[in-house]
Amino acid sequence: MDPTAEEEFTPKLHANQSTQDPNWVEPRNAYEPPRSKTGAKRLGVKFKHFDKNKNLVFELRAERDVPESFKEEFKFNTIAYDEDFCGDIILDVKNDFKIKGGMKVSMKCDEFGRWETGTGYDRRDHRKRRTSYSRELYLLSDDQNRTFRQGETVVLPFKFGGIIDAPSFYYRSPDGKDTCYVKWEFRVHLDLDHGSKLKNAFGRDVDFKCDCNHVGKYLSVSDPVNTHLGVPTDKNISMSIPSFMCCCSSGDLEGRVWLERDHFSIEDDVKKNKALRSALKMQLKNSSKKKEIQNARYEIRRSISIGSHCLSDRVVSGGYFPQSNLTPKMTNFENFNFQVSLNEHGLGLATQATSPHTNYGRLEWKLVIIFKVSYAADPKIVFPITLCPRFIA
Image (tube, rainbow, N blue to C red):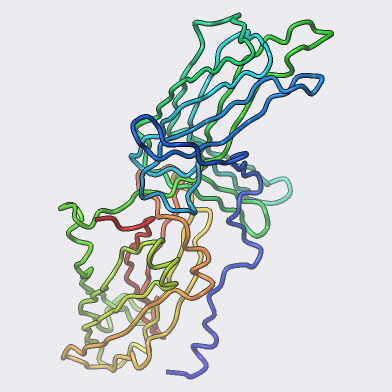
């Protein structure tokens, strides 16, 4: 193998490629309230509402039950697949006020993609959007025109169930023309009676919202459905390599490839061990009479798509396998043992879970093994890679 080949192969993401949502809305005034009556752990956020004269009218608190296993870095707005988002909206009245309508509490998932094609007169702007999860609860709807008195405390329970497996992510291309995201939002809207148009006694309507971080689906290692997690992925190779400028075959690349791991945990592998590594074994032969397989390399790729349109397919890590050339007339299988790993820059991006294929907006990871030949298109084999929040018992 040419010693300069590895230096020339420098896969990297553009430095200004963004994975941070510039419009992200953090939950306000987070706090940890006492446990619920059932003994469940709780997290909450506060919102204070003032009238036109800057007098405190009431304090609105949203509290939710969370599992005991909730880590310290998890917040009120952290959600996961198949976990209920439930709790109470609490109105702590400081001064009398009146409502005109009721209260609407909602949770929704917005999947959005935008991209541009062409230039000048041929320039086109493309957009795709789908709301794949949307739930609304109408509270206080029977108490329209109700007046709340100072010192009154109103507790309104809410529950959002059936949360789908649609992990959050945000992508913006280096030139700023392409955007794709899966975004979750929790919102509370309280319709106030403004009183006199001149006095505007109780201020504007309350519109409290925050974006939620959907971390994805936890994988249970004890679930019989996941017995494959500890078993290497095994793929066969049988590729005819055509001669240059000829439709006939000059030989066949045959064999098998074993990948030790194709499922990784963001919690354990990325954050704790700071490494995504897997052993790779190949058993190959080259039946070509004259041409050699020069070398083999790997690429770890991250792709972003919305619907059937791919906005980005980038290499985040890669490398060459040493001494991986296959000489002509290799009729017996030869064994190779290698390691594949995600580099430090790629780990910085590996904090978002793999999206299921059913999602409209998707973030996916894959390992691509590429065999270099000088006389045809390079044969390759692809292994899907799954990143989950963490493994559980």
